[in-house]
Image 1 (cartoon, one colour):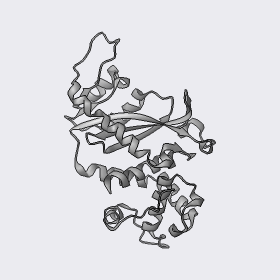
Image 2: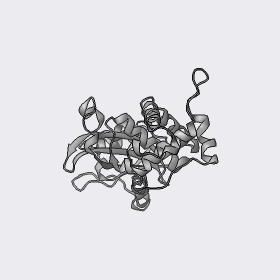
Image 3: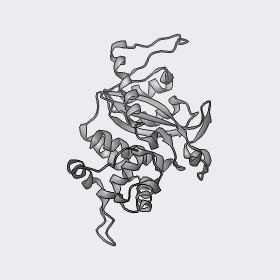
Image 4: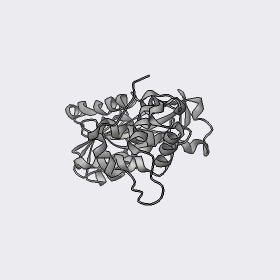
Length: 250
């Protein structure tokens, strides 16, 4: 199991202003200690009850992570830091499969928890967009059998104008191309072999698309993201947003 994780002073100074402010009532348990414990569990892939006692009671770690995931706190923190660099000139889009452990089954809502059955068994698909350096900008969860082009419509709904969108052949549909162009962006997608009309495609610019694949590989260094143990999609998505925040923006 990896060693303990602790937010350093620089990381904490960037994160603290973005956390919920609770001026009234009982003060929260030390945020820095609790968040460090949550990140440690995500990285190590251990059960919550196996977290080091130096982070405090494991139920505090789990309850805080569950509550803030469901309220969208981790997503709001991630989006605030991801947007700080301004709109990107190039956008990459792709997806990756994550095997769902048997402990992830049984969540209320069934398939609404973004777990489906595909050729690889029970799994979840993580869809993401990133900038040209491989820094993630947005995430979306679907069941493992969902088509990439359908999820892309939600992710690409707020593209910055005049950017170039790189995607593989799975996204080569008229609907995706029209969506990108309506927002003032330019699609750079290799055409499928069965297309009668083949659009312009810049192979040289497309070489940088593997940055998003490297982003997924780095994200899966967190063992609780490489395998899904969470029953609800909200908690698993919260884990992704928190891990991405620490990896790329802190």
